[in-house]
Image (cartoon, rainbow, N blue to C red; front, side, top):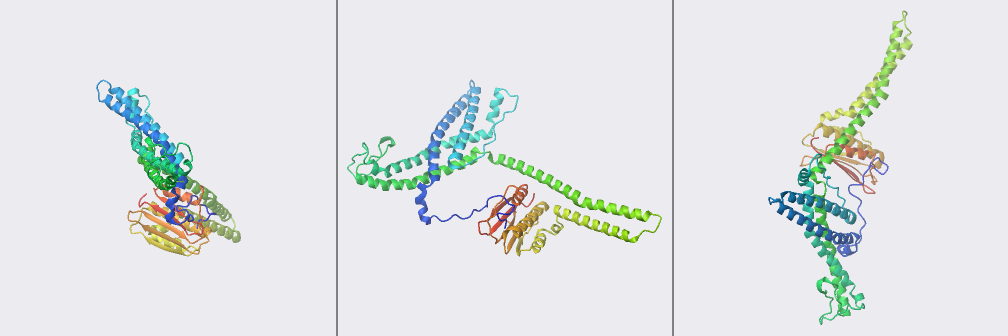
Length: 457
């Protein structure tokens, strides 16, 4: 279904399984060799000084600002310092967001930019800054980054010490790297965290084992820090749930307006090129019949019959086209509910379809219409592109009230979607009611398209 030749347009929701790279128990042994592990370590290393310095500066500004704001003399200066802390936090947040995007691939949309209302004086702009909730969220991130940066440095230290121990046999031959501890000869750290001194060549060999253990643990430490940091970046440096919701509503509203405009243009074109032409021809035929009948002599019935037959054909064709247009707006079969509509749709399919419908409570008419048209277009793609021997259609009402429509087939798979394709259009349509559409189509099949719709538009 929806093969590469079909008009669909997004990568599969569930990508094809990657080939196995060996036994599962050996996967942790490859952690130090993975590029992502090194990127996470570099992220912790570079982000630590920025995080520590930024947190200290913001803390100083906050402490001074609160101290002056609570005094009677320096209240204005204190408010200015607090506003400066929010400005600095915004700048630091942009730096951390850029580092996360470049080093570990965490692309987070920025929070909405601050825009002070026009015509405000200094105190008005300061007050507006202090009321900026997005800035205070970034202040919270900068302060939370301080302990996280120190944990990241601790994780990086494991990398450094582990690498130094693994290199112990080489360093044994480097002047100044030998020492004596009178013990087993294991490498020991110098004061203030310097490189470990190699006491004997045997100790250097043992140091390799010790360093390998550290390198197996170090990636997990830096990954844990990076994951916590990513969660904080998403929660505090992004636009926030409310801003995301507003933006999504703006996008879906624009999509709904565009979809309505396209529908009106299509109706106008179909009426102009179809039913209108038929009705004009019908009117001309009736005029010609009227002229023949209005003549003072008995008309020749042969031409009149032909004109009547042509008028009848045009009237029948116009009715058919108008009926098809009305079905395109709202199929009459939906008047009896979605189960009957899907049963009628699947019964006309040239590919055998197994239908399952479990809808205990009827959704709103708009949701039923979207579900029906999604099923119709997906089944059409099954017939045209999949090479499937059978298909399945299910419509189930989930416990949370969501209507889940699922269309699958046993075809050759490999479906992809394209920006101007049918699946992209379906995805836009379901987004207008806060629905989702997911495609899973590995090479060789099977293909499954899942549409989740709310119970009410």
